[in-house]
Every structure is written in structure tokens, then in C-alpha cells.
Amino acid sequence: MKKILLFNILLAVALSVNAQSMKDLFLKMPQSVCPLLTEYNRLEIVDNQKNGKSMMTRNQVLSVSEMKELKDDYARLVLSKSSEKVFKILKKTDGTPVVIVISTVFIDKTPDSSVEFFDTEWKPLDSAEMLANAVSKDFRYITIDEATDELRIMTGHPLTLKMNGSDELPKEKASTVVMKWNGSKFE
Image 1 (cartoon, rainbow, N blue to C red):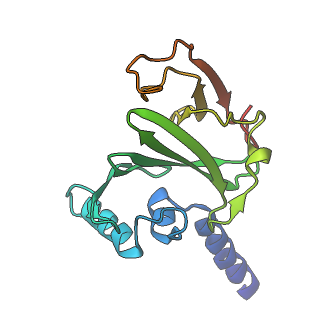
Image 2 (cartoon, one colour; image 1 turned 180 degrees about the vertical axis):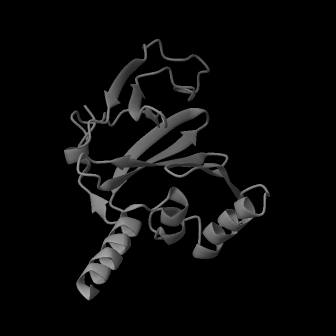
């Protein structure tokens, strides 16, 4: 009887470790993933949500950061007027959670995004193993659809940067690659 009870307790602990919400992961996120927010800032955001207030905090550089969305498996954080991060929990085929973090900075109005992957202890995972195709190093805008787990990578769009002192925009066309999460990587 003691063995069955011990087994059930261990099983419950194992299941609760894997069933972390984005809120839990956000609170234990190391500052290296999001240098503008301290542990106190993250606690303030979550506490504000719990109390029905705007999920805002004054960050390390004394500007306002705001969590626009905080759901069980998705979060969108506007760090400043020129940067944001999107977090999404993906499930591998074996049920192991993977956290994708899309960081976007805006130079004038031109976005430039990068993508990273982490386990639930915030240890970095190899992005090359998670993406079937390499992500262009050109200016790009990366988004993820929270419902379908589709990763959309747009590159080569007209830049709003002034080129050689001119207001004229380049005439290149945008190209978009859409990848779907298959339980082990984006294809």
C-alpha cells in the first residue's frame, strides 16, 4: 500500500512539473532572457494581472514595459516603444514542453526579429534542430499564431529606413515562409 501511495505522489509531482503555465515560466525566467525586466518587474506584472490592473511595470531603464497578453501557453510583452517579445509553449510529440521566444526590435518602423528555443528550465535548445530551414539574417519579421502554432517569417519587405539620406523606399517585394510545428520542429 505504501508503494502505491509513493508511486501516486511521484506521478503527481512529475505531472505538475510538466504542466507549467506561461505565467509560471515567466516568473522563473532568468534575467538573461529578458534583460530589461528584473525578478521584481516580472512579479509586479503577474500581481497586476491577478488584481485586474494593467500588466505594466517600470523596467531597468525606467521606461514602461507592458504585458499585452498572458495566457496559459502564450505571452506577448512590449518592453519599450522599439522592442517586444513573444513567448509560446509548444509540445513535443512525447509531451515535453518547449518554449519559443521571438524577440523583435524596431529600427524606425522596420522590424527585425530573432527566435530562440528553451526547455522549461530556461536552458537554451539548438535552434537548428527546431527549424527545418535556416532563418534569413536579412531584416525579418517573425510571428507565431497562438492557435495553430504556425511560424511566419517575412523577409525582404520594403524597409522604412532612410536609404542614403533619401525618403524613397526600396522596391523589393516581401517573401513569406510559413512553417508548422510538427511535434519536434517547424517544417
